[in-house]
Image (tube, rainbow, N blue to C red; front, side, top):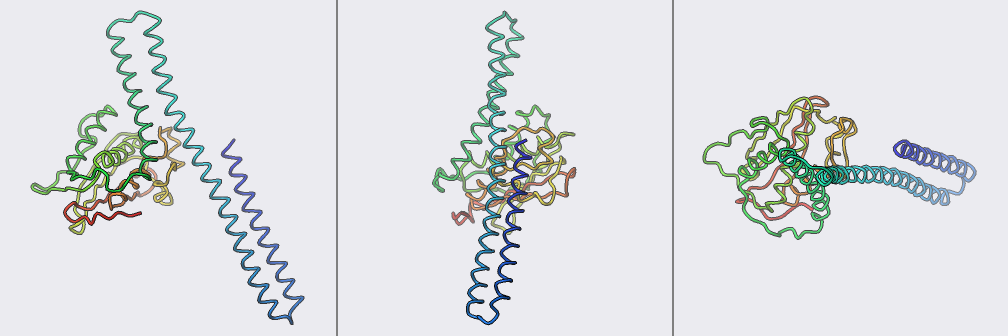
Length: 308
Protein backbone atom coordinates (compact mmCIF):
# COMPACT_ATOMS: atom_id res chain seq x y z
CA UNK A 1 0.00 0.00 0.00
CA UNK A 2 2.76 2.48 0.91
CA UNK A 3 4.60 1.68 -2.31
CA UNK A 4 1.49 2.30 -4.46
CA UNK A 5 0.71 5.48 -2.55
CA UNK A 6 4.21 6.83 -3.14
CA UNK A 7 4.07 5.98 -6.83
CA UNK A 8 0.78 7.88 -7.01
CA UNK A 9 2.38 10.85 -5.25
CA UNK A 10 5.30 10.85 -7.70
CA UNK A 11 2.87 10.79 -10.64
CA UNK A 12 0.88 13.64 -9.07
CA UNK A 13 3.93 15.87 -8.61
CA UNK A 14 5.16 15.18 -12.15
CA UNK A 15 1.72 15.95 -13.60
CA UNK A 16 1.44 19.12 -11.50
CA UNK A 17 4.90 20.28 -12.58
CA UNK A 18 4.18 19.67 -16.26
CA UNK A 19 0.81 21.46 -15.98
CA UNK A 20 2.35 24.51 -14.29
CA UNK A 21 5.17 24.71 -16.83
CA UNK A 22 2.67 24.44 -19.70
CA UNK A 23 0.46 27.12 -18.13
CA UNK A 24 3.44 29.41 -17.66
CA UNK A 25 4.47 28.95 -21.30
CA UNK A 26 0.95 29.70 -22.52
CA UNK A 27 0.64 32.81 -20.38
CA UNK A 28 4.06 34.08 -21.39
CA UNK A 29 3.43 33.59 -25.12
CA UNK A 30 0.07 35.33 -24.83
CA UNK A 31 1.64 38.19 -22.92
CA UNK A 32 4.38 38.61 -25.54
CA UNK A 33 1.87 38.61 -28.40
CA UNK A 34 -0.13 41.34 -26.68
CA UNK A 35 2.94 43.49 -26.07
CA UNK A 36 5.01 43.07 -29.23
CA UNK A 37 6.10 46.72 -29.25
CA UNK A 38 7.47 46.75 -25.75
CA UNK A 39 10.79 45.00 -26.41
CA UNK A 40 12.48 45.83 -23.11
CA UNK A 41 9.52 44.56 -21.14
CA UNK A 42 9.39 41.48 -23.37
CA UNK A 43 13.03 40.65 -22.62
CA UNK A 44 12.44 41.12 -18.91
CA UNK A 45 9.36 38.92 -19.16
CA UNK A 46 11.33 36.19 -20.91
CA UNK A 47 13.98 36.27 -18.19
CA UNK A 48 11.40 36.08 -15.43
CA UNK A 49 9.56 33.37 -17.30
CA UNK A 50 12.77 31.32 -17.62
CA UNK A 51 13.38 31.65 -13.90
CA UNK A 52 9.80 30.57 -13.21
CA UNK A 53 10.12 27.49 -15.43
CA UNK A 54 13.48 26.57 -13.89
CA UNK A 55 12.04 26.94 -10.39
CA UNK A 56 9.05 24.76 -11.20
CA UNK A 57 11.26 22.09 -12.76
CA UNK A 58 13.69 22.08 -9.82
CA UNK A 59 10.81 21.94 -7.37
CA UNK A 60 9.30 18.92 -9.13
CA UNK A 61 12.67 17.13 -9.27
CA UNK A 62 13.26 17.85 -5.57
CA UNK A 63 9.85 16.51 -4.56
CA UNK A 64 10.29 13.31 -6.58
CA UNK A 65 13.76 12.72 -5.10
CA UNK A 66 12.50 13.28 -1.59
CA UNK A 67 9.69 10.79 -2.06
CA UNK A 68 12.12 8.18 -3.40
CA UNK A 69 14.56 8.84 -0.56
CA UNK A 70 11.79 8.41 2.00
CA UNK A 71 10.78 5.20 0.27
CA UNK A 72 14.33 3.82 0.58
CA UNK A 73 14.50 4.87 4.23
CA UNK A 74 11.19 3.18 5.01
CA UNK A 75 12.42 0.04 3.27
CA UNK A 76 15.60 0.21 5.35
CA UNK A 77 13.67 0.62 8.60
CA UNK A 78 11.46 -2.33 7.75
CA UNK A 79 14.48 -4.46 6.90
CA UNK A 80 16.36 -3.49 10.07
CA UNK A 81 13.27 -4.07 12.21
CA UNK A 82 12.95 -7.54 10.72
CA UNK A 83 16.66 -8.26 11.11
CA UNK A 84 16.54 -7.24 14.79
CA UNK A 85 13.19 -8.73 15.73
CA UNK A 86 13.58 -12.16 14.13
CA UNK A 87 16.72 -13.34 16.00
CA UNK A 88 15.47 -11.83 19.28
CA UNK A 89 12.18 -13.73 18.93
CA UNK A 90 14.07 -16.93 18.09
CA UNK A 91 16.40 -16.61 21.08
CA UNK A 92 13.44 -15.90 23.38
CA UNK A 93 11.61 -18.98 22.10
CA UNK A 94 14.55 -21.29 22.78
CA UNK A 95 15.13 -19.77 26.22
CA UNK A 96 11.47 -20.27 27.13
CA UNK A 97 11.69 -23.86 25.95
CA UNK A 98 14.76 -24.47 28.12
CA UNK A 99 13.04 -22.84 31.10
CA UNK A 100 9.70 -24.65 30.85
CA UNK A 101 10.63 -28.22 30.12
CA UNK A 102 13.55 -30.57 30.69
CA UNK A 103 15.77 -31.28 27.70
CA UNK A 104 18.60 -33.71 27.17
CA UNK A 105 22.17 -32.58 26.62
CA UNK A 106 22.10 -33.06 22.84
CA UNK A 107 18.99 -30.95 22.46
CA UNK A 108 20.40 -28.26 24.74
CA UNK A 109 23.58 -28.08 22.66
CA UNK A 110 21.49 -27.71 19.49
CA UNK A 111 19.51 -24.90 21.14
CA UNK A 112 22.72 -23.16 22.20
CA UNK A 113 24.09 -23.46 18.66
CA UNK A 114 20.99 -21.86 17.14
CA UNK A 115 20.96 -19.08 19.73
CA UNK A 116 24.62 -18.30 19.10
CA UNK A 117 23.90 -18.13 15.37
CA UNK A 118 20.99 -15.76 16.00
CA UNK A 119 23.21 -13.65 18.25
CA UNK A 120 25.83 -13.40 15.50
CA UNK A 121 23.16 -12.29 13.05
CA UNK A 122 21.89 -9.69 15.51
CA UNK A 123 25.38 -8.33 16.16
CA UNK A 124 26.14 -8.20 12.43
CA UNK A 125 23.05 -6.07 11.79
CA UNK A 126 23.83 -3.70 14.65
CA UNK A 127 27.46 -3.46 13.52
CA UNK A 128 26.43 -2.56 9.96
CA UNK A 129 24.10 0.21 11.11
CA UNK A 130 26.70 1.63 13.51
CA UNK A 131 29.43 1.42 10.88
CA UNK A 132 27.31 3.35 8.37
CA UNK A 133 26.98 6.24 10.81
CA UNK A 134 30.55 5.99 12.02
CA UNK A 135 32.21 6.28 8.60
CA UNK A 136 31.05 9.85 8.09
CA UNK A 137 32.46 11.01 11.43
CA UNK A 138 35.76 9.20 11.87
CA UNK A 139 39.02 11.06 11.46
CA UNK A 140 40.45 9.78 8.21
CA UNK A 141 43.89 8.82 9.49
CA UNK A 142 42.71 6.99 12.60
CA UNK A 143 44.43 3.67 13.38
CA UNK A 144 46.09 3.31 9.97
CA UNK A 145 48.55 0.48 9.56
CA UNK A 146 50.09 -1.73 6.87
CA UNK A 147 47.66 -4.55 5.96
CA UNK A 148 48.60 -7.55 3.84
CA UNK A 149 45.59 -7.70 1.52
CA UNK A 150 46.10 -11.32 0.44
CA UNK A 151 46.06 -12.56 4.03
CA UNK A 152 43.03 -10.41 4.84
CA UNK A 153 41.06 -11.76 1.85
CA UNK A 154 41.88 -15.35 2.85
CA UNK A 155 40.72 -14.61 6.40
CA UNK A 156 37.45 -13.11 5.11
CA UNK A 157 36.86 -16.12 2.84
CA UNK A 158 37.30 -18.48 5.81
CA UNK A 159 34.84 -16.38 7.85
CA UNK A 160 32.30 -16.44 5.00
CA UNK A 161 32.54 -20.21 4.56
CA UNK A 162 32.06 -20.73 8.28
CA UNK A 163 29.18 -18.24 8.58
CA UNK A 164 27.20 -19.73 5.69
CA UNK A 165 28.17 -23.35 6.46
CA UNK A 166 29.73 -23.82 3.02
CA UNK A 167 32.25 -26.49 1.97
CA UNK A 168 35.83 -25.45 1.12
CA UNK A 169 36.43 -24.34 -2.44
CA UNK A 170 33.08 -22.77 -3.33
CA UNK A 171 34.57 -19.39 -2.36
CA UNK A 172 38.23 -19.25 -3.37
CA UNK A 173 41.11 -16.87 -3.99
CA UNK A 174 43.13 -17.36 -7.14
CA UNK A 175 46.85 -17.82 -6.35
CA UNK A 176 48.96 -14.68 -6.19
CA UNK A 177 52.38 -15.03 -7.89
CA UNK A 178 55.10 -16.17 -5.50
CA UNK A 179 57.02 -13.33 -3.91
CA UNK A 180 54.39 -10.70 -4.68
CA UNK A 181 53.25 -8.76 -1.63
CA UNK A 182 50.17 -6.56 -1.64
CA UNK A 183 50.31 -4.22 1.37
CA UNK A 184 47.81 -1.39 1.75
CA UNK A 185 47.74 1.37 4.32
CA UNK A 186 44.38 1.27 6.07
CA UNK A 187 42.09 0.54 8.99
CA UNK A 188 41.99 -3.23 9.38
CA UNK A 189 38.41 -3.57 10.79
CA UNK A 190 36.98 -1.38 8.03
CA UNK A 191 38.75 -3.25 5.25
CA UNK A 192 37.56 -6.53 6.75
CA UNK A 193 34.00 -5.17 6.79
CA UNK A 194 34.19 -4.14 3.12
CA UNK A 195 35.57 -7.48 1.89
CA UNK A 196 33.19 -9.51 4.05
CA UNK A 197 30.19 -7.54 2.77
CA UNK A 198 31.15 -8.23 -0.85
CA UNK A 199 31.63 -11.96 -0.17
CA UNK A 200 28.41 -12.12 1.82
CA UNK A 201 26.45 -10.56 -1.07
CA UNK A 202 28.04 -12.96 -3.56
CA UNK A 203 26.87 -15.92 -1.47
CA UNK A 204 23.39 -14.59 -0.66
CA UNK A 205 22.57 -13.72 -4.26
CA UNK A 206 23.58 -17.15 -5.59
CA UNK A 207 20.44 -19.15 -4.74
CA UNK A 208 21.13 -21.89 -7.30
CA UNK A 209 24.61 -22.73 -6.00
CA UNK A 210 27.57 -20.78 -4.69
CA UNK A 211 30.59 -20.40 -6.97
CA UNK A 212 32.63 -17.33 -6.07
CA UNK A 213 36.09 -16.51 -7.40
CA UNK A 214 38.33 -13.81 -5.91
CA UNK A 215 41.43 -12.40 -7.56
CA UNK A 216 44.08 -9.81 -6.68
CA UNK A 217 45.89 -7.87 -9.40
CA UNK A 218 48.23 -4.90 -9.51
CA UNK A 219 46.96 -2.06 -11.72
CA UNK A 220 49.31 0.64 -13.10
CA UNK A 221 52.00 -0.39 -10.58
CA UNK A 222 50.38 1.71 -7.82
CA UNK A 223 46.99 0.13 -7.19
CA UNK A 224 45.72 -3.28 -6.17
CA UNK A 225 42.34 -4.48 -7.45
CA UNK A 226 40.29 -7.10 -5.61
CA UNK A 227 37.67 -8.69 -7.89
CA UNK A 228 34.92 -10.87 -6.47
CA UNK A 229 32.92 -12.69 -9.17
CA UNK A 230 29.87 -14.87 -8.64
CA UNK A 231 27.51 -16.80 -10.92
CA UNK A 232 24.34 -15.64 -9.19
CA UNK A 233 21.37 -13.44 -10.00
CA UNK A 234 23.29 -10.59 -11.63
CA UNK A 235 22.35 -6.90 -11.78
CA UNK A 236 20.50 -5.04 -14.58
CA UNK A 237 22.71 -2.51 -16.39
CA UNK A 238 20.66 0.44 -15.17
CA UNK A 239 21.19 -0.53 -11.52
CA UNK A 240 24.97 -0.97 -11.46
CA UNK A 241 25.70 2.48 -10.03
CA UNK A 242 22.65 2.66 -7.78
CA UNK A 243 23.57 -0.48 -5.80
CA UNK A 244 26.16 1.58 -3.91
CA UNK A 245 23.52 4.06 -2.70
CA UNK A 246 22.63 4.02 0.98
CA UNK A 247 19.55 1.86 1.71
CA UNK A 248 19.11 0.88 -1.96
CA UNK A 249 18.25 -2.69 -2.96
CA UNK A 250 17.77 -3.88 -6.54
CA UNK A 251 14.01 -4.53 -6.91
CA UNK A 252 14.35 -7.74 -8.94
CA UNK A 253 16.96 -9.23 -6.60
CA UNK A 254 15.04 -8.39 -3.43
CA UNK A 255 12.16 -10.52 -4.70
CA UNK A 256 14.14 -13.66 -3.82
CA UNK A 257 13.63 -12.78 -0.14
CA UNK A 258 17.30 -12.17 0.57
CA UNK A 259 17.78 -10.67 4.01
CA UNK A 260 19.61 -7.38 4.23
CA UNK A 261 19.53 -3.70 5.14
CA UNK A 262 20.67 -2.08 1.89
CA UNK A 263 23.87 -0.87 3.57
CA UNK A 264 26.35 -3.53 2.46
CA UNK A 265 27.63 -2.09 -0.83
CA UNK A 266 27.23 1.47 0.45
CA UNK A 267 29.74 0.59 3.17
CA UNK A 268 32.02 -1.08 0.63
CA UNK A 269 32.32 2.03 -1.53
CA UNK A 270 32.52 4.42 1.46
CA UNK A 271 35.36 2.42 3.01
CA UNK A 272 37.22 2.09 -0.30
CA UNK A 273 37.01 5.84 -0.93
CA UNK A 274 38.14 6.68 2.59
CA UNK A 275 41.22 4.59 1.82
CA UNK A 276 41.94 6.45 -1.42
CA UNK A 277 40.35 3.84 -3.68
CA UNK A 278 36.93 3.05 -5.10
CA UNK A 279 34.42 0.26 -5.75
CA UNK A 280 32.40 -0.58 -8.85
CA UNK A 281 30.04 -3.29 -10.06
CA UNK A 282 29.86 -5.10 -13.40
CA UNK A 283 27.31 -7.61 -14.66
CA UNK A 284 26.10 -9.00 -17.97
CA UNK A 285 22.54 -8.77 -16.68
CA UNK A 286 20.08 -10.74 -14.63
CA UNK A 287 21.03 -14.37 -14.27
CA UNK A 288 24.62 -13.85 -15.41
CA UNK A 289 26.41 -13.14 -12.14
CA UNK A 290 28.12 -10.06 -10.78
CA UNK A 291 31.69 -8.85 -10.34
CA UNK A 292 32.45 -6.31 -7.60
CA UNK A 293 35.87 -4.65 -7.87
CA UNK A 294 37.53 -2.83 -4.97
CA UNK A 295 40.62 -0.78 -5.82
CA UNK A 296 43.06 0.43 -3.18
CA UNK A 297 46.43 2.21 -3.42
CA UNK A 298 49.44 0.07 -2.54
CA UNK A 299 51.08 1.18 0.69
CA UNK A 300 54.42 2.00 -0.90
CA UNK A 301 52.78 4.31 -3.45
CA UNK A 302 49.87 5.72 -1.46
CA UNK A 303 49.67 9.47 -1.23
CA UNK A 304 47.63 9.28 2.01
CA UNK A 305 45.01 11.45 0.40
CA UNK A 306 41.46 10.20 0.13
CA UNK A 307 38.47 11.04 -1.94
CA UNK A 308 35.80 13.12 -0.21
